[in-house]
Length: 421
Image (cartoon, rainbow, N blue to C red):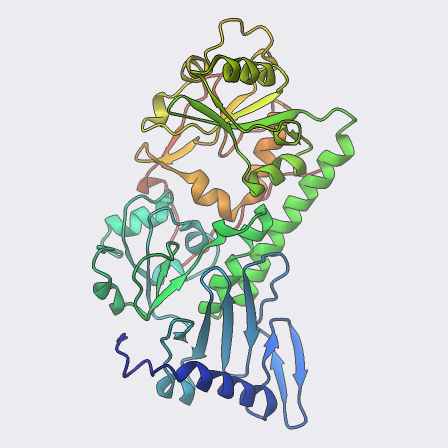
């Protein structure tokens, strides 16, 4: 796949595509419709769309269907991706590569992934056969065992992301960093840009389109969403007027801050808790300033559950003592989260003792994150958390390794469904 301007057309290509898509809409070649299972009709023809996805929750991408092509509108990078079926004349005759339009032939014969801070779990455990066509990655910072296994077996090649021209050998190269220089085969995949847990998880449908496996993607998302909403309803039916106060906190260079990321706050609300951000005006506190420290300590005395997000290069050895040293409070008797043993971190699953699965598997399986937070807020004692570990109880981390992969790469792992009643 060449990135040359001669093959990707000129500035007029955007206008040409608009004309082409309008013609497809209007004439008997096909009907452009938003992804939904069913039938679309024009005066000249009837198109049966039997393998389609409809975006229900995600805010930053949309899918449209024609008879022999699909269009993904990705508002994260402002691009439209024209996906053309490989058994059509259009596949060999059409090529777009402009600042706002790119074309791909599907299903993808192979692909590579920029695996730096990238949720590879969407590729690995959700769609059958998709992992087997992954042939390149840019880093071993991956928190999934089967990807690591394929790399160790030589089935996935390590690529240098500083040499983007070498990545053009693949039918597609998926990225999450939209600021980097891009070749024609680069496609942005950025579920972490969404503001709610289910919105992030629905990006499985984005990938399903590239593999012609929308039915499978729909099944996976439906299962995840159903389980997530079941947990929300279950905790709502059991929660009284009391809602535990939860603080997502981070320490950096002598300053404590309270997290305001929307998806984290949504998790707490759905788990039956209340975010501390709703009751305070200030979000950062400098421990070297006495007034700041005093106010910070006062707030901590009102908190029931703490999630410590402090970065550490050594997660394995980070414990409650590190946290207590950083808050610099001698009299800890008022700290309810210590009394009730509710001090947590989300680094329970890690790879090579540094790569945290919170930024990977937790994105594609929000129902497991929600179940963890419900357990943190309303401990039952009979549920084993997936991503969260309790610092007060000195829970250890789980190191992810290739030998933990016990399945064939052509077999999709089903989403983990949490018991809900």
